[in-house]
Image (cartoon, rainbow, N blue to C red; front, side, top):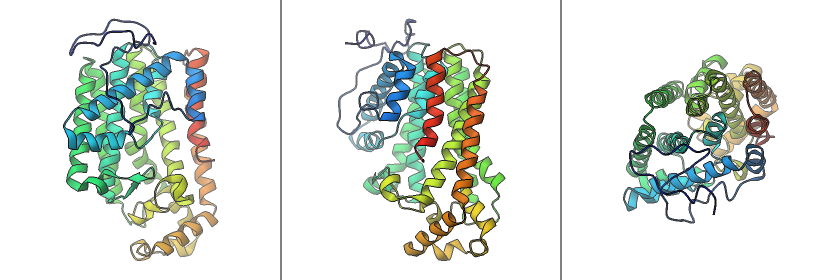
Length: 363
């Protein structure tokens, strides 16, 4: 039994006693739908956990248990859909970045903050699937498909509300303000994406601003929340690290949407094109290929065969390589942001592995 498991459960509203990497979390019921990322890590995650040390693995496991308890705790129907989302996979990159930014030190408040960040992320995935009418998420049916629009919307709303309830228990006004700001940016980014749908005038600059809002801001908040909880004086540098990693993450996700295949991405190739989302690979390819520049996506994407052909044409233009290079520059900038931050060796190495892992996933 680990030192985390030996600690008594904390009482609601009570402050947890300060010990390094403690996790006095309530127990959750086991389920086959939500395997722990700490006990079933990928090779990539294993390297991060080894560099981060045993405290990181314990904090991640505690967060997984807390997520499951929240997912199961609000009625059978909502529990089924919330657990479905929790069990769909994901490496818990944002919680890991939060823990490492704190130096894995800060008590159970770290677990609450990481849980809140991941709940927000899960909620946005569900709401995105509603807006996109998506059938698959990480190779599994979405809540939108299995439960319908109403259930999916309610499940996303539940997760959003529980995120703030969880974070409020840290009694940190600054933390709640930071996550609120990130959620405002998420909403603004989503509105930008909807407003730009199918538009032939979207520039690379406009795309990157949307990515900053919709993706990078939550990565940034994860690192800032961790630094604040851990008492670091380098919260701005850690936030810059998170923002740059987030931008690289989104660009490479958009590259993968074009390159596929579905067996690797867990979604239909060209899914962004199908819902009118204009991404960097298409913007770059459009500037190089006159036929793509004159393309009316609304007409073309009605035929799945034509979507594959458009993706092939984007790839043939060299746009995917250019987009990857831009993402690599953001990863380099992320690592540079850590240069003047006082980090212990394992902490620095783990953060660099997280940044590198974003790129390696798409190699």
